[in-house]
Length: 139
Image (cartoon, rainbow, N blue to C red; front, side, top):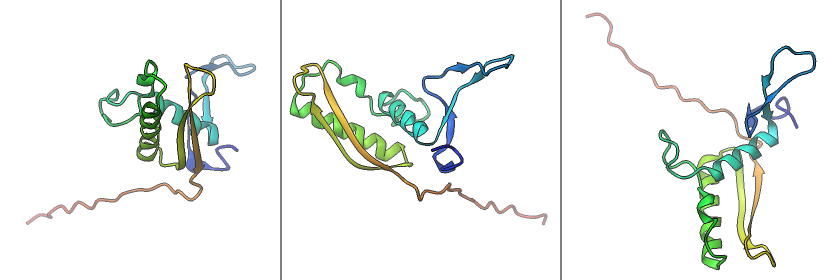
């Protein structure tokens, strides 16, 4: 799937940011991603962003990194899944979240797997807002 297939999914910098040198090119160009990979990269960035880290958007992010040193309990799994679902619902309009589940990863004592069941919103259209300003004419 490419940008031409689903332009509403967008195109942007690849993550992590990197420079690619095209064949025969004299200069490197910024690598971009589009379509489904672009949305998945945006989801990873959103989930790894600490809440409060963005000055102009203080509620952006899920801050899943704060769970790194937490015990692998049912309560921690519930809070982690809730934070992931909240962030996706609030900040990723291209995704319809069906379910988020955080479960201990079998015998691996140090790992919790977060399973996100989602669909891409194929019906989303770019929105715009027009605010009329009425300026009084000359008196």
